[in-house]
Image (cartoon, rainbow, N blue to C red; front, side, top):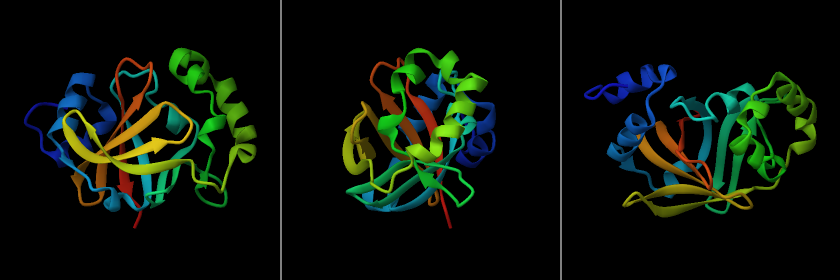
Length: 182
């Protein structure tokens, strides 16, 4: 992403990525989102910034997120033959993802996850939606029930938000985009 690019241009080019500083500047320049605006199902994609988590969710079949209301959020939907299915994030080894990304990126780990994924699904919500202050701005955020993660959202346009995953112990935030399912 380059300074002066339009939001549409930046989104069109996001597959090429950005530096962490560029992504953070773009995030900071976006308007906040009201929590009620997040209700619905959202298709996700990563925004590469050199994070050890870049491409990891997509490699595992991540579909997106679903916000039923402020108290009932499915933070991780993964693709399945029957459509997107919620996975219990408490069963995902976050320490391995954060501290040993090479293992998480390995083909063996991806095959093992695909085999185990039906056992990891849940019908119970595993996060909540709140308005939080982050980087001096009050905006919608998804707070995981049992993980040290808060996903903070800023508006790109009426159907797209930029997410910043704040994970304890990860030196730089992980960025992703969510597009509302129509």
